[in-house]
Length: 223
Image (cartoon, rainbow, N blue to C red; front, top):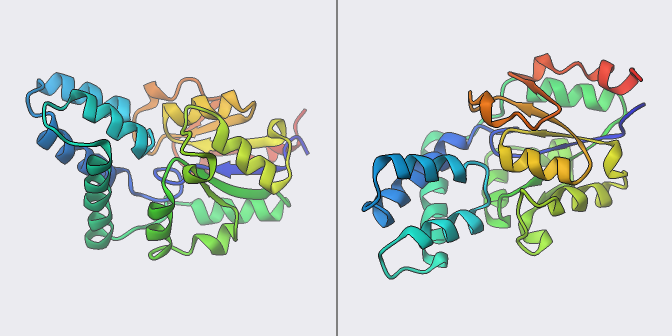
């Protein structure tokens, strides 16, 4: 086979949480950067998509006129998003389970490599049985000293822990930052357009609109 593993991003790629984090970002920007124009807020909001909470809150703090720490912003943003988990519930991206079953049929190793924190992963595990799919192979940026995508560290960490050479890994991502990280790790990257925002996914090796469009046999067996 051409590849031996598939590494998945989590939010927006496996689970439908992107709207919740976007709402949290909007509330934080409204509170701490309300002096900015709406165009500037929209620009910041777009840039923060897929960025780890540590880095996104640093970025927001730079634009705030209030005397507030990055840790305070981070705690508040996480609280807002996690409350939305409770009120809205979490669900898998359509056809993820079927696609994962295909990976197992072909004998591929799988893992999660996410910009999320350990706290957010633990919160997610309260709602969805991710370990049924990935067992212990769920890796977050707290495991790589908070070095987030677009740096490749989390993908390289995942590949090392599942025992697969990076060039033999496929990554599935939904954000520009994640795609950059996958390519920097030397991995083939499929972008899944769950955010209906194809123009930001252009650095991926291919773009699909849903899991059903991924031709796994072609990827694995065509030279």
